[in-house]
Image 1 (tube, rainbow, N blue to C red):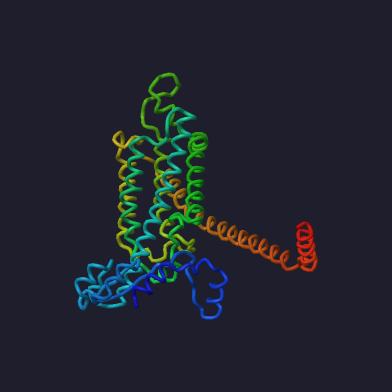
Image 2: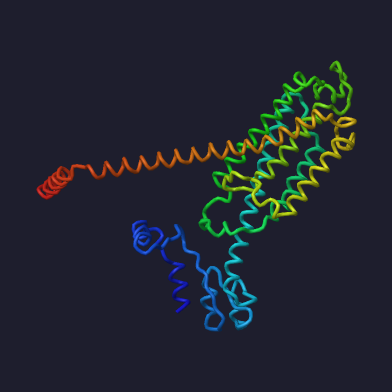
Length: 364
């Protein structure tokens, strides 16, 4: 019955037998998930309640199902349509993917912001990103970005992905590559502007302009153009990286399907407009230079931000080639091991074993 089937599948250890799994795949084209099996059961009668309770996920019919079956189930199909199970699976995978996208974006911002603040504090005893700047970055990261990335509609491609192992980390190796690659680019740009910016662009160093101790020549205790430029560049890199974060699988076209999500586009445009208003008219309230930045510096800031897009393609290429090299290396190791096993001198091994047995028996 259903209860026996659910219990047997749930307790099955077939996934641990690699040879049996390969045989099933070759002979019957049956793929066995490499972990404890996740069992789903459907039912509508009272006698189905034990099986619905025993299964990992129980589906009960909302119209034809009895109340006992509904109470035992985890999910109730309100329209009694089995196609709704596919819809539920698609939305469930979409929620998981949305969490991954948000984590990918958030951790990238955290890595870049923390290292920038630490280096600026160690070098000049003053961070280039003021407290109000960090609050705005956190608002982008926690509130607006979460709404934008969580509003991605599910696609049919989600159903083509392999199930996620329960022991697998939510942060995949590709996500780590994306985060570290983008964070490295952002840190490089910010530190380059911090140390080489005044000499290249001709404005006074921010730590001197904003100093209030009077010990340095040129100290004005004013908001500096230098640090405003760094803040603006940093925010624009986050906005463009938000577009990159929509992809978890290294897609070439990061804009794919972006217009199918009007909420994402709206939040991105609103955030960009707010950034322009704050930099140009924020003055002391937003700790930016009076009068804002010139058109030249705006173009450079947006250019550095747009640089996140080609950098993502470089990350994708490097990760793909690295993954292929690792697979090739592991394949060579397996082939070498198999060759050693297949070329052993079996006759010599048998003679050694026989001599060991005869020696031990003579001693007895």
